[in-house]
Image (tube, rainbow, N blue to C red; front, side, top):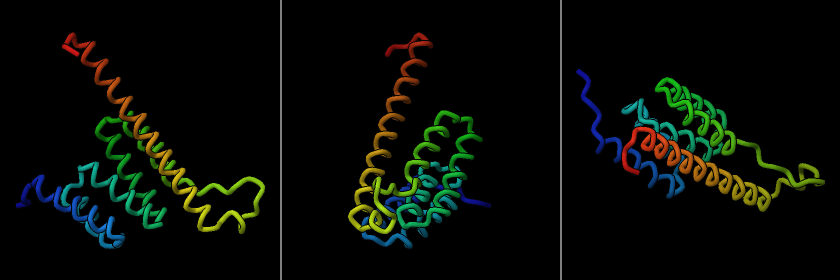
Length: 151
């Protein structure tokens, strides 16, 4: 008989992965997140963090594949709006680093340019997250209003 997953076990894995990531141990963080996804295959947070961990570690193919699994789960649950937002998030996170206009590829690929493009990508991801939050708040408010409940 399979034991049900407890919230504490999953939380411990997610927190452990975050600690490992902050320490710069991306390989161990990914392994921990793989355990979290295996333990709770329907937990969308674990899938999203695993995809992001792959991206941060530079494994774009695995990140893209995990985002696709994550988005497929959202769509299977009927969360099509969330799936669209996640596709945008993934596209921004996994976009190739832009090259400065007018410069050859070798000149635009310095460490400073990489850091700058990473910072711009993070800003774009944050903007998408903020827009998603406002969108979710608007939808929730509209549903409450339509139901006649208190705002």
